[in-house]
Amino acid sequence: MKFKQLKIIFAIFSFSVNLFAQSSGDFLGIKLRPEVQTIVKEIERKTGEEIYSEFIQQKDYMLGSSLISEDGIPVVLIDYSLEDDPKKLEAVIVHELLHLRLRVNNYPTFVFSPSVRTAKGPAIEVEQSNVNDLKNLIEHRVFKGEMERFALYRHVNLAGDAAKGAKKQKGKEGGQTEVINYVRAILEYHKASDIEELRKIYEANNWKNSIKTGEEIAALISQSNPQTPQAVETVFLKCILKLYPPPSPKYTFKLTLDPENKFWRRMIINTATQPILRKNK
Image: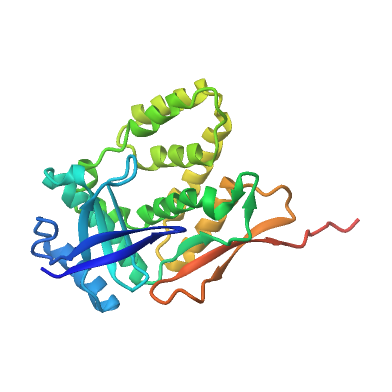
């Protein structure tokens, strides 16, 4: 089995990890179904590289992640907790392969420009994780039909994690992370009762604005059903304006293509001013 040590970069954070080339017949111990083997072949054909993968310790509540490295290598990282759970492992592997297929078909990632600042510091340092999550939620809408056709969503239940975190944050102000968690609950929880439980916790925390904004963003994503890279960019801009409302209509966000990224489409998020149309008297 081929082996590589790759430097993995998430926004401004990086780490090294030992990875092994996978085959569709044995992907981290799972034999992939024929339809998914086709996805693997497409990713490898378009990148010109084999997919490398390994079990690692993921961040809290994350089961998997995927990316194309700075060297153009497609990578799938799976949490250790799934190593002995083949059904959930297959679901997460397929999910990450679907994200990678979007990458190789010019579906963009988004990163804050270093010039965009917040009260807490540069947006790329303090808010980039929320942008990554928003992008993922939009992409989940893109391939929702395939995950349902494969009958894999049932093996991954996300309910409970956001509720635990929200209870620990009682007394604190709700922010963009809480909005994203509420969007995820609306779009991806299996049971309405789990969404209602989270809503009650948010209300007890006085996070009414997080509920309202979360409902608005979830509606934008759900109703859009984007199926092209350009449609994803359009939905993303609508959602980020809800997540980070500008101080006045004069300001907005704009996306520009990152010319330094050679292996996939990455859009840089910057702020812009726009003309205000005034009615004639």
